[in-house]
Length: 95
Image 1 (spheres, rainbow, N blue to C red):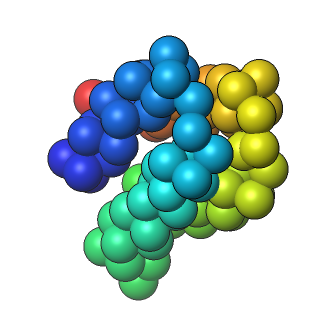
Image 2: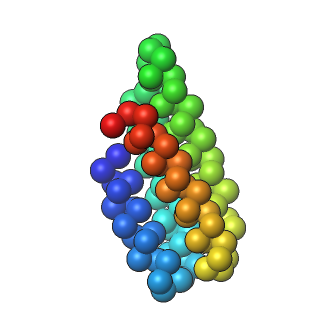
């Protein structure tokens, strides 16, 4: 999940100088990182593991959707904000 933090930093810098290709790459990185993190929890039987599994799958799906719709700064900002909020929601529960 350390890589997700780095991706968030890249996304924040992209808010100032929008490039559609970089925006798409940021969302694709998020999706891949969420799937990688999900692999740790997918087979877990605990309530926490099941919750994290669901959260990472939802995050990956949202990032996939965002990657195809990040065609302008406003859409990127909106999608990025939603993904960051999803990250925060998990951190508020599990940190």
